[in-house]
Image 1 (cartoon, one colour):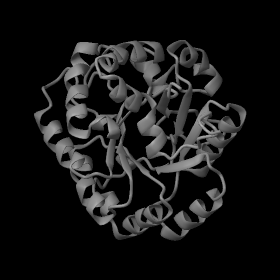
Image 2 (image 1 turned 60 degrees about the vertical axis):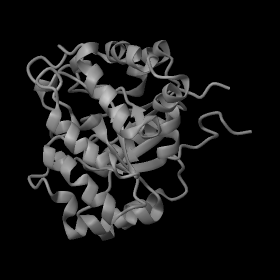
Image 3 (image 1 turned 135 degrees about the horizontal axis):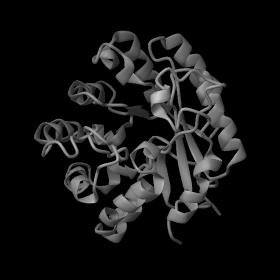
Image 4 (image 1 turned 45 degrees about the vertical axis):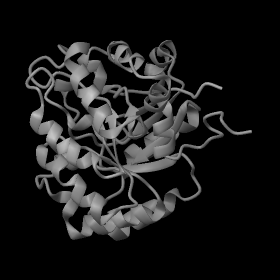
Length: 290
C-alpha cells in the first residue's frame, strides 16, 4: 500500500472570526477568508491526500476555526493549534481542553512577532514547553532570525523529549547568498535528534517573492536532506501564503523535481511518513488502520 501524501503546513483563516494583526491589505489577495475548499482542487491535482493545518494567529479563535475546518473536511489529518506559552497555567488549561481530540497534534505560536528573539528561553515559556513535552505534543518553531535558529539546540537540550520542527527551513537566503551562516546554524540544530524541519515556504528572500526557481531552492533542500535526513524532513505547501509566491501548484511543481531525485524511501518519508510520525497522526484518519 502506498503511503499517503501529506502536506504538513497549510492554513485557513477568517478575519471576521479571529484577529490576524499581520494580515493587512498589502497581503491581497489573501487578506480575506481563506478556506480548505479554496485549495482542495489544487491538492487533488497534485496528488496530496491530507494536510496538517497550522495556526496563523496567537488566539484561540483561530484554533477553533481550524477545528471546524477539520470537522468539515476529512482530508485535514491534524491541527497545530495556539497555546499561550507565556502563561503556563493557561497553557495547561488549553492543552487539557484538547484531550480526547486526536486531531489536536501540536502547538505553534508566532514567536517571530515577539520583540525578544530569546522569548523561548524565558522561564515561563520554558515551563510551558515542559508541559508540551510531558504530553507528547510537538512544537512548531517559526524561525526567521538567525537567533531563532541559534536557540533551538538550547531548547532541545532542556527538553530532550520535546519534538520540534523548524518551519520553512528557517527561511534560507534564496536568491541572495549561498547560505553559509544559515547552514551552520541549521547544522547545529540538526545535531539534536528531536529537531525536525519543514521543506516549506521556500521563496525569494528579497524583492519579488515569486521570483524563485527550482535551481535556486535545490542547494538548500539538498543541504537540509544532508543535515536532517529524510526521517526528519517533511513537505509543506504553505497555502495560502504560497499564493503570494506563485500559488500552490507552482510551489508543488517547483519542489516535486527535487523530491523525485530522492530514493523511494526518502521520498515517501518527506512526502508523508515523517509528518505522520512527528505529529502522531491518527492512522484511521489516514486510512492506514485495519
